[in-house]
Image (cartoon, rainbow, N blue to C red; front, side, top):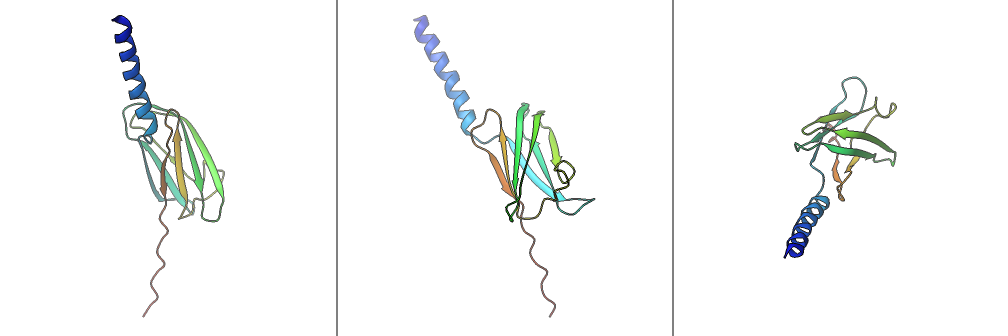
Length: 123
């Protein structure tokens, strides 16, 4: 009887752990204009109260340029910004694809910075 209960408990814990791992991490990705340089600033926010470990951000610009940045930990409901200063002077352009991977989660969170619509031609 004790073995059956132990196996049932282990199976429940494994199921819960695996279901969390297949979900994307609790990350919100937003962006804003840089106030100092050209380009965008990417904002990464943990939307849960649990701390996250090893948050890896991969950026791919429309022209193929790529950059990565790793934040070793992110507190519950914590956030950080990523822009030209943390990326060695690389200015993040519109159209950049963002992928955020977090330790313990199999799927990444992702977003693409919208490209700005061109100004309409005067009539």
